[in-house]
Amino acid sequence: MKIVFFSAKPYDKLFFDKANQQYGFEIEYYETHLGPHIVNVVEDAEAVCVFVNDKLNAEVLEILAAKGVKIIALRCAGFNNVDLETAKRLGLSVCRVPAYSPEAVAEHAVAMLLTINRKTHKAYNRVREQNFALNGLLGYNLHGKTIGVVGTGKIGKAFCNIMLGFGCNVIAYDLYEDKSLVEKGVTYVPFNNLLLQSDIISLHCPLTPENHYLLNKETIKQMKPGVTIINTSRGGLINTADIIHALKTRQVGALCIDVYEQEEKLFFRDLSASIIEDDNIQRLMSFPNVLITAHQAFFTEEAIAEIAQVTMNSIALLNGNKTPLPTVMLT
Image 1 (cartoon, rainbow, N blue to C red):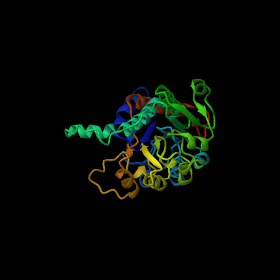
Image 2: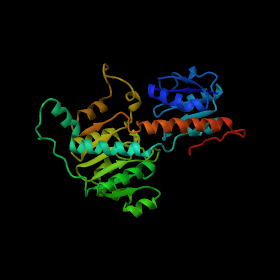
Image 3: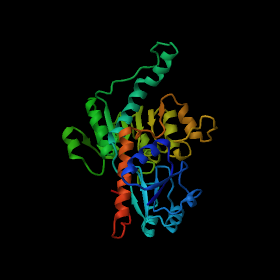
Image 4: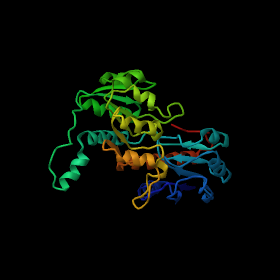
């Protein structure tokens, strides 16, 4: 069986080659993202393996199906970049990695919060320049603060547990309450109440058509002035133009993002010698109270090893299934 990988980086090759030792698949790697511009390179493959910024729209899926591809394997949890209706119509199986070391993403969200609050990134640079002054580095205690968590799946749950350990008051919004979190002291509230009460809001929900731009000028207006917002989920949950305005007016006191709605043009690339034409990301990077990382929350040894193992196992199961393949497998 042949699998064609897109958006493949050196670390993908390292971990997937190791996981493939027990399967023996033929693997072809492409560093470029999958889209209409490159889809025709797929030849004699039964599966393609893609990442968060690969675009599997109707045009791409129809070409893949015509070339004999049967399986679309997402080596990530989100699936908003796949036209599922078209996949269903074409009889393509779609699998993903619904849970991979949720602690990796949760811990990164906490790391970003601690960094923006205590300004450790600025302190590090100061000390390297032999500047030991504390002016401008004032932070606040997380203990006793109200943390609003949007989405309490595996990652959101891990984040809640960490913040409870800090002595925070944790409130949450989700369509389904987690009883184990309630028993630990997490209070579920309506979304509007979460906006009103939270000192810090952290997003841990998938991106769907219903929650696109979940944080926009109207919902941001309902938040406490000076609120801190963390997003390690999907960039499309936040309206970038609206969050920039909120930063300028001081309605939002700090912003930590590991994702960005136009990240496919930027993230996972070295653009240090390039002119970036995206004015919004340039504006965000100019704020002293904005911390941006390039979709690295998942990036731990444990997480990538698990992603590789689960992805290859899912492909093997689908390939070895003698009955008709399921139209869409998302869990």
